[in-house]
Amino acid sequence: MSPSDADRLSGLAEWLRCPVCGEPLEPAGRLRLACALAHSFDVNKRGYVTLLAAGTKFKGDSAAMLDARDAVLESGAYAPIAAAVARAATGTRILDAGAGTGYYLRAALAEHPDAHGLAMDLSPAAVGRAARSSDRIHGLVADTWQPLPVRTAAADSVIDVFAPRNLPEFHRVLRPGGTLVVVVPRADHLAELRATGAMLDVPADKADELITTAEPLFALQTREHITKALALDPELLAALVGMGPSAHHARSTPPDDVLTATVSVDVLRFTR
Picture: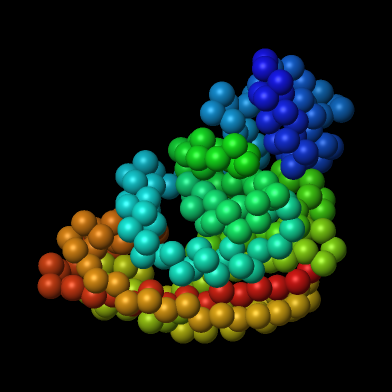
């Protein structure tokens, strides 16, 4: 193992605790992490580790969904969201919960040149892409709904963009005074597509509910509304529908005459 590989393994280990006993994980030879109680885990050669609890049933996004998401993100459709997330994040250790292929985490790291990130997602394919995309990103396959295999107070910031939220665990893994950045869709987000039945509806008060739920653990600092009008071609239209949960649940495909759509989200910044 080269010095750079050893450094990368050490950097990954610094984030993690054992999913079995909760003890810190440390490098234990080439491409292996272990805790003091001898629970050990293989690290994928692509630079990520899988730490899923026994019996985890949820499947991460498919390769087709990831390709669709990449097409949307590379088009610049969500660039204002990425910029807002990057501005809101703080510190040098940034955890992206539900990171996908790392688009928002890369934006945050670009804004903070001294920072390193941990891309956490349930999809091994997504985490593999994220870890390969930057030598400043480590990868973790884990279930956000379970106790996170991340050390207590390991992160300066946690970012969560259109992803499941485990607020008690986010509170635990953030250092005191750390930052939680959450992006939630507003009711009019991609409303033109939702009206066709091609995408799932969004509750009107999603951000307000989150703020209320978070109050015992986090203090809201800022709430920023991001909106952008999109001109749709057939490829972008198909990618928007195919990149998220609606790909599993949509009732129909959107008609070809949907030519525009509105991006509309709230970016919430909390302090622990």
